[in-house]
Image 1 (spheres, each protein chain N blue to C red):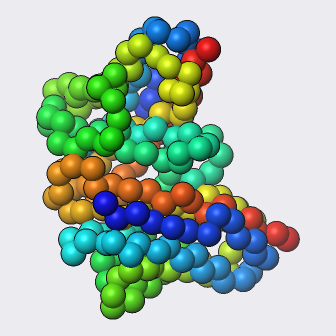
Image 2: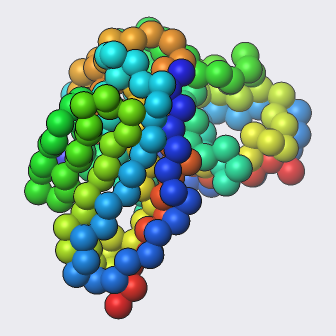
Image 3: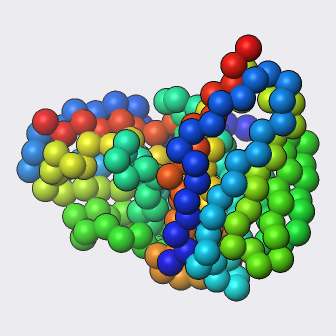
Length: 112
Length: 114
């Protein structure tokens, strides 16, 4: 089971780039890494997913080193509305069983 | 397109009772997953259904069960409720059966056991 660890909280200012790192030392060969964002009283929302190297979409980038034991979510130029909890999820494609583990989440506070 | 709908939004039950929660996925989505979220344990995977079959199950006792209907709507049931079952229960739907594709979450059902 790929256990993950993330910083409990982070503070940033509007307009800055924020990098949140997730450690997953026991990641398996077929595990993908997915990040979700959650606002209070709402369900999580998909941000980005990757397997290795770098993935970029319209809202974030995901950096995964060659050993895949960690991953970094990068949010460019954050705004107040990016204040939320960010979860790292490691899980296997077409895997059966108890292999979908959410990290504890990182509470990001964006200050004006 | 309507999002994932969970009913009811809030529920209060007494210890020992049972409860059934409902989830209507996005139209066309065939996979439904359930999660429990608590302040102490965070987000934990309960189970996943695809085409009316349970394909994945998290590490929860047998008191937690679920099912999926032919229209992809899903229900989860918790029997013999305990105080520790108080949580936000989230449902997520996916178009296909791949657990690593994007999941769309509902707003959840907040269950309070007293």
